[in-house]
Length: 171
Image (cartoon, rainbow, N blue to C red; front, side, top):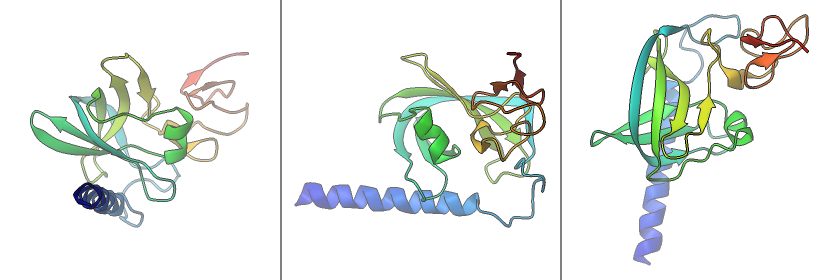
């Protein structure tokens, strides 16, 4: 009974945290561009964070997935991106995994930055969330800069025949 109650308490706390962070990332803030590219990101202003996974909340239809890391004894939350994109990339960090995050400055984001890349320190696996120009890779073909238009399409990793792809390839 105590274990069930403790598990329920943890789940409710995680849901509350995710809801709060999703509200912070919500629409209607009046900031950012209106061209579908999202907030203005500066890839030249880089911050690196390394920490151990406390939790990872990612549920379809429940807002943006959130990663909580223990960084130097303090818990820090990071909003990642599309649930579908993370699931397609098989991103599922476990509690205790050590991750290195590359953050880029974002003047229109509540936390002041966006997660551009995540590396699992133990396995070396890397998940890219942003293209070199700052546009989200998780936006897909219909959203974000360089993900659609004349000349073809861009793959989720930013490569493809479209000359606007961040990592243009010729086939």
